[in-house]
Image (cartoon, rainbow, N blue to C red):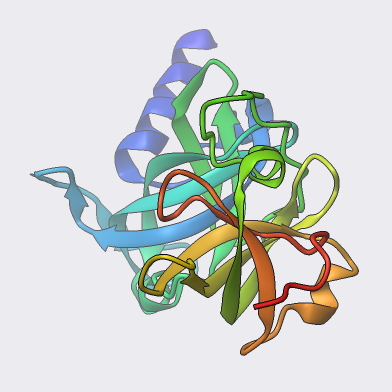
Length: 226
């Protein structure tokens, strides 16, 4: 019985369909799809494809995701699964997320249910440091330099931070007082009150760390005078 179970799981990984064993035993999570590359695994050509249960042609793809499980921190992972050809462009749009399962002992072992929406999960608290710029919201709030930003766009990513604030992908123009403006896109926690000010063209206070992409919109900083 154990042999056939292992063989079935290995076959799932080889041919790219969802790993049914991992769905039963893995840690569920939220997977934001970053890219879908048909037919490639690093420098190698992936073998796999065919006709799915619904009669549509499928291609084995390398699917790069940002994964967040309940109580965990985001990490990048790549799954190799068959995708219906007609859905590849949609999944490559940069706005798609799906339910994933991760091996609790091996984060490189991951499977996706492309038919199931991603669950809403709550991240764990990032490691604390008083000196090193970790890029976390807590560190930037306590140590970041107060600056101004202009919001370009924002999109809810479908999960929350450890304080239960929504995480939004915020694209903003950073306006450092002693340097040229530049644009970044970062995951930013947003409270219910902060949502009211998060719209294109909004001029908001922010915190800047030691790196150009270490930025946090600080909704609790009050009115910013510039």
